[in-house]
Image 1: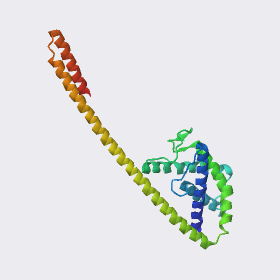
Image 2: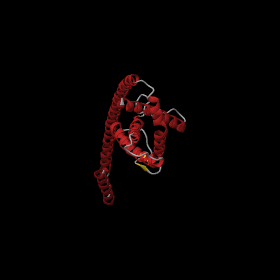
Image 3: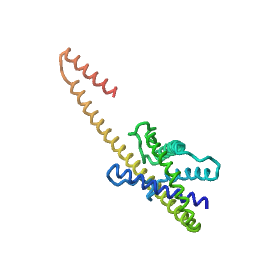
Image 4: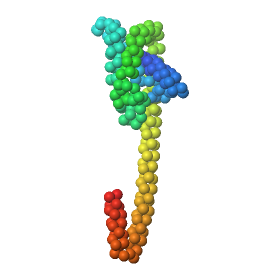
Length: 238
């Protein structure tokens, strides 16, 4: 039951996070933006955040830690969001060569992966979750029979696993296609550059021959020799 409780929280808050981010980015950019990493309407980073919040909530309920004031929740949410966002962004970029968020345009950001402003926002969100959403979640969950929750968790985990596998597979194939296109482009460019230098070399040789074949006076021959030497030096420098 406890595991299912955490699983349901993960999926519920992943969906809420997806709805929030998609609406925010759609309004901001004035066009529809699907903010999910997966095909389904989920933002897993919010789900993992909810698991951490629910763990703290349980510790408070059990009396293992004291009740947290709003400013303490703000600080914890602030630092936890940074700890969660930065490595997640780094891993996704290294794996798929893409960024799902970039805070480079915001002040006090760390490599565009996290920032003070957004972390304050997540800290405020943590207050809302701890003080409002989690109590509501707990009250709602106890009204649902355990068997329904168990079946729901099995279905959601199966769908989520399939979605994750399909997403990673498609992104990996896409990256592989991009790499192949890049290699083909580089090969074609190298071939064209080689042809260009080959034509340049032939033109260079004909120019030297014409200069050398001129019949000039001694002073003019000296000028021609300097021109030839300068052209040769230029070629070697290249």
